[in-house]
Image 1 (cartoon, rainbow, N blue to C red):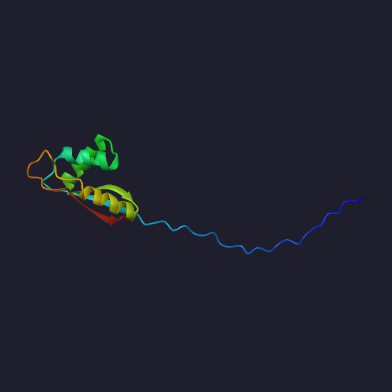
Image 2: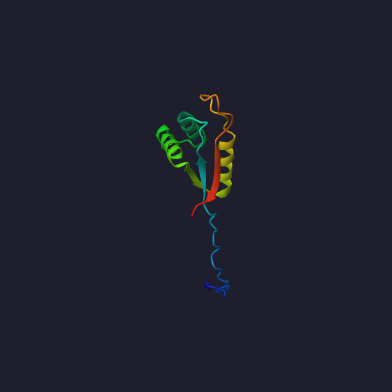
Amino acid sequence: MTAETLTLPAKKTKSRPEEEVKKQPPYHVILLNDDDHTFDYVIHMMQTLFGYPREKGYQIALQVHTQGRAIVLTTTKEHAELKRDQIHAFGPDPLLPRSKGSMSAVIEPAE
């Protein structure tokens, strides 16, 4: 008995260009300054909402105080919206009696 090898014709496959993965454009979450929140409030908020160490929270508090605004995170639009909303819901500063609500934040496209 002899073994014969059967060779089939190769199938033709259309080569497709690889699907391009579209990256979502980044957005900044920007904390805005006001006079109704203390540095300790900002530091605590940055630790709680973003998991930042105390030093980074202090740096953000100083920047928002001196420059009027600070970028606290750059991320996707949906995540930026969530973080902005969490800042808006954080509540008043318990250390400052005149504080009636949360700080303000906006999102902007990262350029």
